[in-house]
Image (cartoon, rainbow, N blue to C red; front, side, top):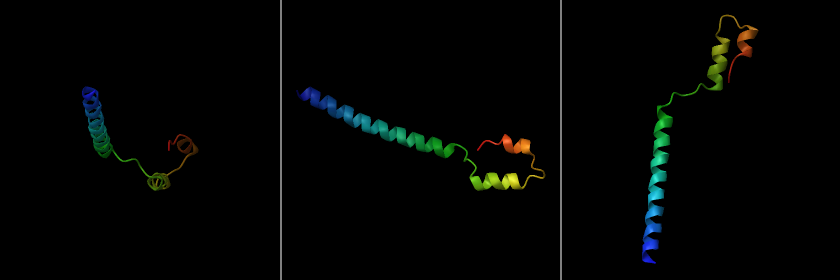
Amino acid sequence: MEKWQFMFFYLAVGGFIFQMILIAGVYIISKSLPKEKTDKELLESIYKQPSISGYKLRNLKF
């Protein structure tokens, strides 16, 4: 009976530590990725273009 209790305890502790490592890894990876442009930046870049054609506006991906 004691063996099962120890095994369950170590699995629970190991799972908790594994989750903390995963959370830290995702945080570090998300910080290293380039930032996405905000809506304001996208609209300013469209506004600053010398000529706005309908073709360019149709193919923008937000």
